[in-house]
Image (cartoon, rainbow, N blue to C red):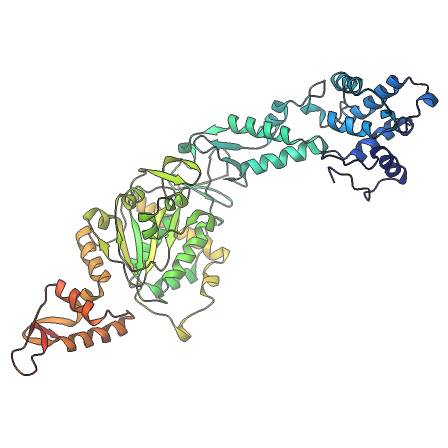
Length: 545
């Protein structure tokens, strides 16, 4: 216990008695080396220490000043803290009327001219101090730099340290721990601050230096270079802050994942597209300029697939911002920095305004402004790919071709409920062997993807837009599936009842009658009122099919 001494520690009765006498119930200030420890070491080095403590000057043959100097010299051999030396002296029997000015002068002289007796040639702490006992920051900081790897981002001054093949944040905490471990009882907060400042300055790098090889996949057991098809050992020279929690095993397979994807997708081509997408998320490279939306009824496997991909990439490498947040919240973009993927399941179906933010983040390494509270804004590239799932696609306001050129839609048409739903499915899909097998599938798909330069997605931007608008507007989808041209008319009440039945079948909450009528009319259908009978309202030129 540093600071106030704990007299219940493992010290002799003589130690405790002597300490109690000299402190004279005086409050002890905080110190990194306990006063009692200093005194115990002095006693071990000098048999007359207790007599000096008690002020036995005559018996020892000292003058008063000579005894004071001897006592302070003994203390200085164990602590370089002048406040601690003065505190122990003031509580001793030698302080009886001794002049404070002379006392402080002796303390200064002794500290200046006396080395700690514990700092012998074989003392491991001696190498961090000058011959006069002064701490030299360069000695300790350079030793830590030789034994470790750090970097400091120039723009935010964040410090990262290398461990097990990847650079981790909170480097300042790691430096602090090592300073304390190395200095042990010689540790001072001021020494720690000096070392941190030294290393931060020495290890400055540009943000662009981080994860700068866009074809390296950092794995638990090494680095896979997709551009060369080679598996390499970890190296601190590659400043990677992204590591997947998966082992590369070239022979591993993933039968459970393959069956799962066959069950939830509409075709083998969609299954292939999903493997391509997973492969695309393995590297910090956005040059193919795509993002994906999974859509379909609830309990269709969309969220399970997002969880699976998140397990492959690692939670730390995945953010979770909705499209609406990215469009409207300036601070949300910061959460995507340094991530491989931004995944948001169950996207709300209310409309959002697409703008340049989405286009930049799905572009080819375009710079974007990052805002973080209490931090100076800066520009960087966002390499997190965007992936969302939804039961009903949100309506896009002000759509354009560029947006739909980037978007890929993948349908999950089936529903798994009751006996067909496996509540333990995600556990079966995320075993170590299955994830290593999925990694192999994804790497193979990524290599094909980079060679072809495009995804195996069939729709062009115009077709994509037409499909999306139909899917995001259930009224339009109902009309497309259930309404045909006719020379007759259909009563409005019959049309609305058919729409409600269709919504129940599609697991969609139906609009109220008036809202349905507005949206149906916006699709180009004409309404009228009969001139006969009860003058019922109807839709002209259409019939239910």
